[in-house]
Length: 443
Image (cartoon, rainbow, N blue to C red; front, side, top):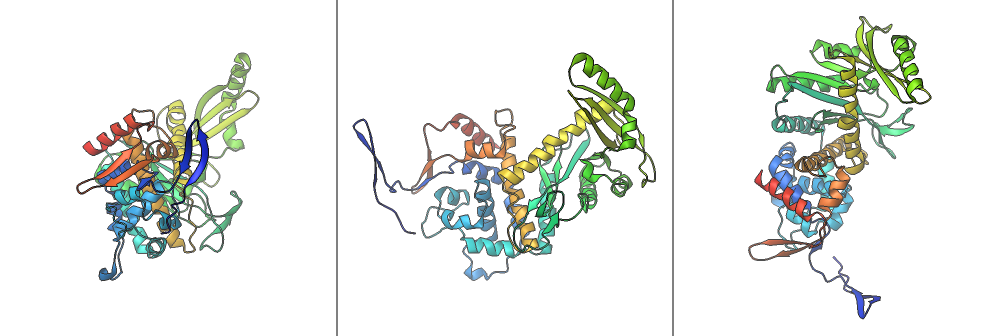
């Protein structure tokens, strides 16, 4: 690598001239990556996933194992370097090398961009199936039995915009661009991303989701017999074929349903009362109601919970269909609306903060593999967030965790017996950083 040793003069402060050179030694901007190294040592996700990849390379010509490459790629994503291209300038980064269990030997750099790209393109359908099963295994192994005897599965789909000639990229009328449409299933209590599944762009939201949910319900009951499984989703999952699949397999649900004239009639009395109280108090008024509803294509009626709400100048009616028996107010206000935090905000974490929408390869199966890599990065960052429980970062966005706990300047020094990470004395979160690190090491 070409070294720049020129000195720059930038004026003065008082009697002291400001000088700049590039002779500082082994300095990195991601000193907090050691937190992620400890998270991975505790949960073993990358190690587990690497066992799903078949290495067809000549063992006598390998410098980087599959696990080494997977660790490098996922840690790069965690640090905000979402492209394999970033490896060419990061492969000698001392912080990343230490996190990947490499000493600071200049002749022992990490994998290059072509090496990582070959890893991604080596994935096939069988590899994807093994990786998905491994993600579920990981979640079940680390998930504690629910105290209330319920596992909530939040299901949602999102768009992943595509560009160029990518396999199965299709135009979606709602999103108004060419895209993929992955379905994501989260743990409604913990926020864990259990299962990502990549699909072509022009599919219905519920296509294939029922099979994934049934598989997860079977796995949950296999581990915890008698646990109630509840699916929570928006109106994209409205349809009797979907309801029947869940009901046949004993899975409860609370799912949004689009309003129509017949549903509005269920809330007519409640809506009149809400308008009256709102006019009298000049405040938003919400009343919850319920009734039985059967669409023309349904074979039976189902319980529908209605939110009859009057805002300042307009009605706001919402409906969910459910198999639960709890009171209407609890089902909607205390259960259904929490889907926004458990699912929608976590999708933002994946797409925005872990660049989960950076699926820019030509082959569909390679993009599926990339989605799993970004899911692994999300999982490690989410585990770091859980380690921050009862601190001001316990509910922080992943980007906040990255900026405050990972993006820390560090000078790294290797001696005969140690690799020293000298963090700045003025690190803003040094007390909290130390507390979290000690917690991770102790675990």
